[in-house]
Length: 368
Ligand SMILES: C[S@@+](CC[C@H](N)C(=O)[O-])C[C@H]1O[C@@H](n2cnc3c(N)ncnc32)[C@H](O)[C@@H]1O
Image (cartoon, rainbow, N blue to C red; front, side, top):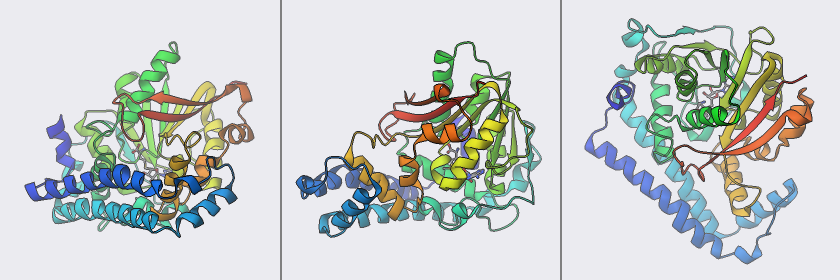
């Protein structure tokens, strides 16, 4: 299966792999060794708890005056750029491999429905999210699906191979957790919002084989890549180009709505719209689960500062705001009852080191 998956990934020469390994090792060194040393310098001057936006910006300003912090910060930013330079240049050299036309004839599993009417929200076009050149909708021709290969490969690199060999740990972990904790819940229809390359959509089809799985994303080239990729896994998934904030599905269409790494990349308004849309789309007793990485910011001031670093220096403009959003309040505003809202940490199946072996679930059940 690894071999089949390689059909949509670039081929790496020895030197390409070596460059990737270097970026990986450097990232570990920056995050562990340099980070620890750097904070030792001013550990005693930092607040032990940061609970307001003002306190956070004060602390950031304090850090920005410290040379070790600036050194760490610029190395970290540089390393992210090096990661994309490495992966991007390999893909660019093999650009003809990533043509949708080449695969199109043999796609028998599932469907794809694209729309010319979809506008990409500003929060996805204003910056190249997490420094990924060109962002999620980049294409150099109408058939170009290389953005999918770039996301697939860079996620593997960025997570230091800890999301499983198919980058699907989040989906698998949630499916298993659902099966253990909601034993009688068998969803008829599942929606994966912001599916990207469909890496985390496939586990739902594997674990709930009788369910219909629909996966949506804003980006046409990513969806095309996802469709090719899921065909290589013989997975029957219906991909549609839709904005998760307002889809064209009828109300009460789904038993389970999931997303993985979607909500931290939307604006505050976009996040609220997505939760309102989930409420509209869920059947009675349907479940919504939004999965994010667990930065453990509530217990650790350094983690909070590192997450905040991502907001300011890794082109993740909503990360801090997303982290401090009160999800209980948000879900209630969007129509969910307080007793049916849960914020839950679950174990990563692979004990993913991305970040601490846990995933954060924002879960709500649509009970009247
Ligand atoms: C970080 S990627 C996550 C992809 C995939 N779910 C995963 O687990 O790796 C976020 C995805 O959300 C999509 N996205 C962001 N805002 C969206 C919106 N309003 N509607 C649909 N998709 C959206 C992006 O195009 C991107 O593919």
